[in-house]
Image: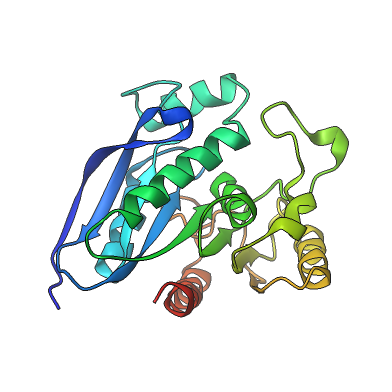
Length: 246
């Protein structure tokens, strides 16, 4: 099996048939393999997220990261695009799900796809990965410390009209959750509430909490980067996707 990969900026069809920017990293041999949609964090579609996308390709998965902020500031630097998205009230959930579905369609259309696609998200992307497990055409989902899953009805917005926790009965894909014990959003109480709802609904899930880790512990550029949590977190990700994506 060749270890050659190709990584580049491409265009995919997202929500509402919009053409949006995405970063793809794919394996160049013909062996059938699963795919992973990478959902970037709130700081945006940045260098670190592209590196994560390439990491999936080096481990044998085709991967794509849709730029969820593309519509707000096409061609802008990640920080400027993120600011523009925040100024607009944030990415609407239905739009994000459409863009993620577009990423999954792109991956399933590759000649070496085995037809299975997972999704992984960090920070705000973790929340969107949780939503994707309920609403998008994916076979597995990884939520890395996604805040805003457990919210009350008075905290919803036009962009986020339904608390994600309320969608647990609709969850179709198995879920892996990776959390920091020092995080405040999601807090340990929020993680416990998610576990309670998932267990009560009979959903397939697996949660790991790293007691000494805080929010953003996967981000090498953040002061909260936690090497021990990241080392075990990747171990859990490879085992989970290996089981569900082949």
